[in-house]
Image (tube, rainbow, N blue to C red; front, side, top):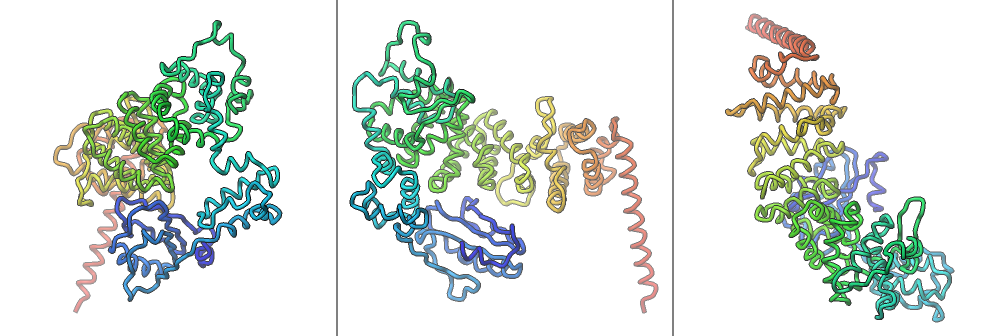
Length: 569
């Protein structure tokens, strides 16, 4: 970080890069002028290939010519290759792990740091010498919130609430309801209290638990606050939400249940499936976040078993939950490197369309916004080999979402045009995907967001997007089997402009440019221009003006060429 901070680049020109590739590829790294980049390879599991180091030498030379810098952070296992001895412009630094005690000192006042060496303190020698820096930071946070040098609760929190959680499940039927509410709170922390309590009630009705309901049902029970309090939860009457008093107890509880309470974990797997299509249906993102935390401690295998169970239900709610979960896992700093290759396999597996639908949903979430290039590759696989029509429609919806995201529009449109053209050696997708992805109408209803972004962006980025749009239309129009669908698609763009769904002036400018590339007398182009509507006269006038300018320039060129020949010796 100090190397980046010292780089002589303007303020605001520091960028973090993620390994957004299926295979390590230096060609995906940017080369803008006066920029400082940090390529963070944390979470990458496999060693970088030899070709990466060869290409890095060439990339360093290009960065030097534009006064830019790149810092790559990687473990020694990932940075396993060697740069050629002739490599210049590249400096490799081995960074030793800081002493954990020194890390704690950076976060705490001296009066609390000494608790680590005080035999009378709860925190005496709790930090092993080989601890990771992140573990030292976590301990510093716990000590910072301690009531004093002796704080058994904070010590238990540091150890993962082990003693506390075990005390909740020491046996007996007295606290069964509170245990169910604790479990529901652990997976739905900060959700509406009604959702948490209803989910707990579903668990209590499971055949393996079957807690008899009191006569009078809900009227025999206390209010939300009184039911939540014994389970270590607080209730906010203003918002109606409920939350754990100690948020870190949620992950600790889930870890305990899946590693120690084996029989109950099977019941909970089925329960999670039930509530995801029941009381927790509107809080799937919260549920997915909790399961991502669980995967950090118990691994991805138990979570994937849950996923397969949900997908077997083959209903929209379960598929959406899996998509949310996969998205969270895919962007996780340590788990993501293992998850993303699995998503590639799932996207190619047309024999399991429910998995493919979940991938499409993940693309439309954080995964697509964070690892856009990889997400687009997954969309291409889904569109080329969909298990059913639902997969195709979900993939198309995810693609439209990426186009409509302003910071992703340029990359997504560029990739889409490559798919339908000969620019890529890999198999392409059908050109109608280009038309459908940018259509301003869906099922007869206005849905202009993707097209709106492509026509609204300004400066060089906007001009580059419009150039790619024209190239895409030329690719579609050059196909031998033109159909009315192609003509209708371009007419829809015009109708959207006439209905003020997209900006009028950029659309007219686009049509003028498109005429230059398709040919002003192209039959499809003329039909769209001459169709009745508010923009007809404006389009005809602008296109004739453009043709006149082009004719004058051509005439001037001919005159100049003729003069040059006449005067030649």
